[in-house]
Picture (cartoon, rainbow over the protein chains, first blue to last red):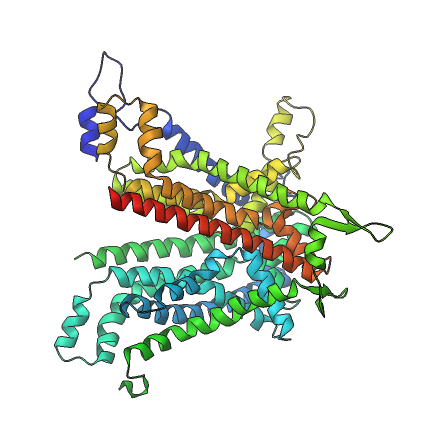
Length: 281
Length: 301
């Protein structure tokens, strides 16, 4: 693609002529776009180091709001709840998604394949608020009140498609000849899975688990509606802090949560990039 | 070893899919059916429902009872729904206008750079939406990042009052879902054969015509997919109207939440959710049809 661009960019009457398909101002527009995308994040992190009591008036650099946030009992409890919910729902949703992806990517064509795919990706298509309402009504109708358990079940449900997608993509990118070779060399079905398919699939499973974890950790609206008094997660706690008044403590908590998400997503990016280069032999 | 696995291929398939069917079936599909039933019941003033059939929740969308207990037309909820559509449509168009040139610009870059740009676009998307919306309060709010320098420089004399307006909600929505517009457009632009652009140019198409008559028609599937991915979550949005609209400027999503958290009218909340779901189904049918048509065109040529 770039060759033909150069061929066409011959100078014309001293004025620089853009090659076909290039337009003036695209680069500047893109810069503006990224400023818009990252400005709120930069502002948020910047103000978390505000020593003042109110967020918006700058009172010098300080990290006291981080210290205050770390000592806050409510935040500590919410962090634990968030970690418990995210860990348990990641384990379950990734396991469920892995078996489902194996069937849908390796099970050949069968009746009900399209419907199964639709069902697994259903939580992606329904607006979050509708899922929240439906699950809330369901738990209340059957009288189920397990506190954090209710939240975990809801999270497992909507994390399944997020774990499913990278695992299926990895399976479909994988060459089946390794598995065939193993079978030809008298490996049993289990041995083939254990020593060939599973290790090759691992980057996909790790990527899926990471996405599920981030999605669960960041979920707000479903947890807000399904969770009871004792099952406050960090995003729900942050929401209640915002409602009470804006202090840099909110910024400090948000910054920490932000960096955890960014770290996980960056790791995901590295893993999935590695898995791309692995499969191309 | 696998003595405990079913012998037949079909048996194994369904065993592998059983956990997915079980979890999503019981905790997603069944709840939606129950929600549909709840929307036809009488509300219990203490939350929940009374087991009496009623169309009251759907009647409430259009009518209210006046002092003489007569049904009169009440545009209140219709207005909120209409406003939600307007704001969601506005945010979708803003995302398209803002995101399309960026997706196109990324396509023109060398491959290693492209991946990095896409990575930069996905990062905010995976971070917490509540946090990102909260940041806009600091930017738009009274004495915030935009106002303070303008006040100090004497360009404005009073607060701009940007918060708690429809504009603030629209900015919040556009910001929230912008990556969902750029990514599918980029995905379809990436497959674009750039020789077609030269062919058009050789046949005396102007720069504008190359864009409007070659590039845009060829990446229409991406534009449609992106618009749907932005429009649907906008319609059900809760965080942006709640934080940036101050809870006064309701949208469909925040109205639903209000019915469960404060108003204690579960059937009405369920009916509003059914309405949202109906819109999603209509939009997806439209999408499936458009995709089919596109496939037919691609197959025919």
